[in-house]
Image 1 (cartoon, rainbow, N blue to C red):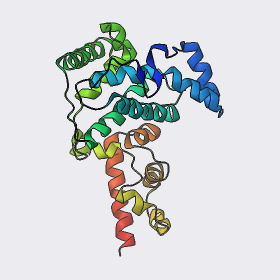
Image 2: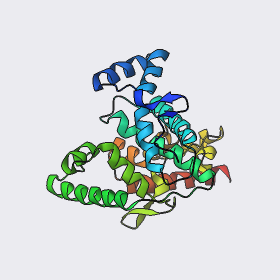
Image 3: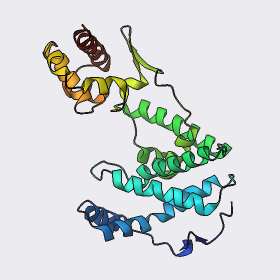
Length: 260
């Protein structure tokens, strides 16, 4: 991959604009109001981020122009989905989105993705630092706090951790409380799942009425408002394990009623 080339997809990468933080905030406020020109300027002002990420895939044999275009798709998706009210920098949010698009493209084209030794070292350092800071401060540190502690940019931390991630089964156990096991799938809100499609059928009205008030609330929050079990537990003030247990029991009652 000719990563040293200056012009990529007709863009002179040597002259890409660099936005200050204040400019980014002002532009994003306009984007949220529907300003298309501000959106275009914001995209152009973040092309350096795309360029820095595709350089990390220099070991692949893919055309740099293709990777740049795919990375731009990830950037645009990040802009369209970013919540400016969250306490996180846009670049920290955008890196995994851009990388995700590039990785999917490489996988679809049969290209292998290798994790370098330096990335592994960074990831291990981040994990160790996070554990030490958590023990010391009794709370999970933010990416920015970890970055400040070890002198690595937040974007590099996100990149390293994302590169180290391996596919996980939806049935991977993540927590056990009193015999009730929570799985990865319990923490995901997926409106395409068979259970949610089933719950959304018009015939469930009567079935829901047969539930206890707490079970009704959980079913409403989970399947009509799209909240995860973690969010439901926090909202109603019980543990995730209790939410999981009540949800499963409620679905069992409803399914039994509808199939009787």
